[in-house]
Image 1 (cartoon, rainbow, N blue to C red):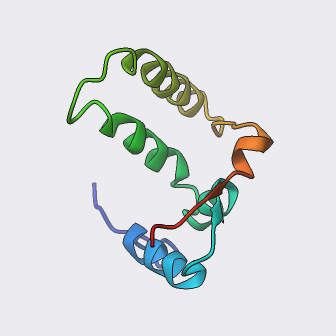
Image 2 (image 1 turned 30 degrees about the vertical axis):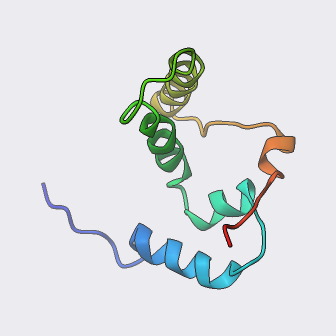
Length: 97
């Protein structure tokens, strides 16, 4: 098994740098972020949800995050793209100064 990537698949870091240069100081929606990640948005979301378990255990946080991780995993296992409501996808993410 080789780890060769096709020429059409770019590195995640390259995509994130391009996105950062494009948006600069503008707010970004989750939908725009998902589109920029080119199908890797689910993996990024899983990573962000799992980060909360890596540092400090906050009581009560493990249940909702664990359910979200489980639901995303089930969606990916059955071949469906994880779904988020429109009001969440259109939510603007502010940039840090």
